[in-house]
Image (cartoon, rainbow, N blue to C red; front, side, top):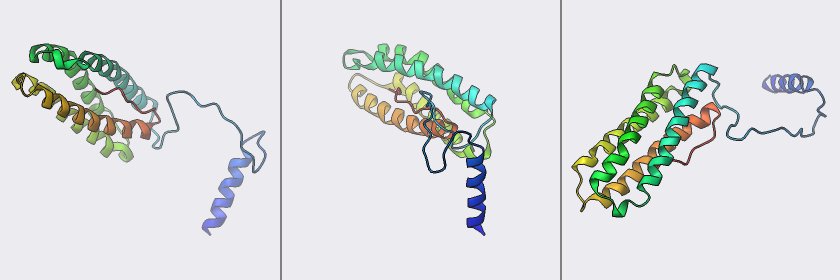
Length: 168
């Protein structure tokens, strides 16, 4: 019975693909930065997440450049550089939390929110660091950024956006 259903579905798909020859591959144009969504989301959800992601990507790039030479910077300088980043990450986490996600993507979106919030808490701990502990703190920053980026990329993949590699 399942085989019959599959054959019928394939026949319908092929009949609705004008200009394609059965058994042939038809080239398609691939848009840069996107791929087919694994989980369909409505345009509002996609737009909210895309805007929040674009803003965070810009903040990620800015803070990555600012921290590139962190070995010569003081805790006060790094704190100042992180302040706008924490604001951007907070806005991103709030947006991800506020989006009306479909049930199929709710858990990855909640995981992303929690990881972003943990990352924010860690970033805010910079004020309790000293010059002696700064190198270790920066290493932990990169670890938590990587974990947050991985969670972000899972949601991006699900909604059809290209992955990011801009986290610090």
